[in-house]
Image 1 (tube, one colour):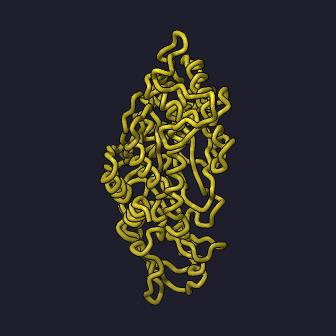
Image 2: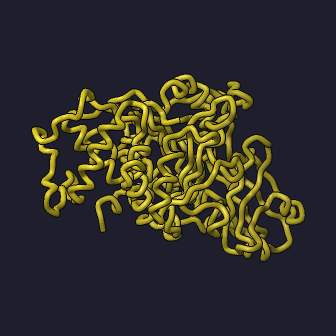
Image 3: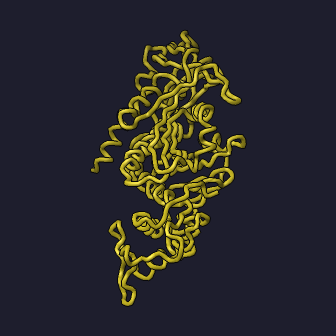
Length: 444
């Protein structure tokens, strides 16, 4: 068992029980927990503020909610499972006949053991979520409802972010939501992958882009973040990713493009998907999306895509209690991190290289870059991989020839007839030798 597995598993166990919502103690406690490992700055947009077409809701505090049957048995209890309450339920105490109570009970008939996740953020109501097999066995009679919740108008919607600076002010934004109660793939997979990516990228010897990491409640949280940072993003965002449902059993990561294909990833990932079976590509759609819908809306038109592994319609636990640690698998999160990090390393060199010795062909021999080409052999790359001598020389010369600040690395790889991974390895060598630098403007 790896250290990363142990670390993510412990983080999961600590975060899973917290009663998160789009506001309130649960989401803020989750952000403070992650502050142990990332230098997150937590901001809050006050309740009642107008954020574009939305009004920031009051802050919801859940103390406890119980539903007690006629014989005194506890049917629902948020101390046992915080999915038992309709998220954002209004405070309610009273006794209700089962015939009246039924309109406030939510279940999933085709998943009889699952407790559904139901919300009512912007329409005041109350209710309980219950396994359908339990609901069907409820006896007629009077049931006691006790929903101890509170709404605070002096609260707000929080978001948390930090940045790993790079050589360029141009940013890659990596974001996930942190607002669902106890669910694994649909809630904690994104933040945990984000956390491990932070730890990995922090260790890179070179970052050409700066990397911003963001956690927020879905939809309203991204809008709150955009209300304060959209001008900055318009100037500095090279590309971004929303991480959602990155656990589960699927063997592939699906990338959904930005709306108008103005992201580095819109070119990088389709290129990878042509040669690597663990990537699939999907054109942008607002249907069944996440926060990329906000970033890509016409007023912002930012270069944000989405990465997911196992999504709505692909597993029975979507938005219910079957979405647990076993169904998600921590190992799948580590696979997601491995794959996304590998892609980010490619994207990090997918700007437009500029030859630093452009007057004639630079002397490669004095830089130990001219291989012995009169006999078969391999060139040792810096990452313990080798490449054929002639192929290496072709990539070096073609890269230097095309490195005029106008051609992207992807265009150069196509001209070299090599993989983008091979080109990235050679680019690292050319950078170390001082022969190229990057113009890190967005590709689009």
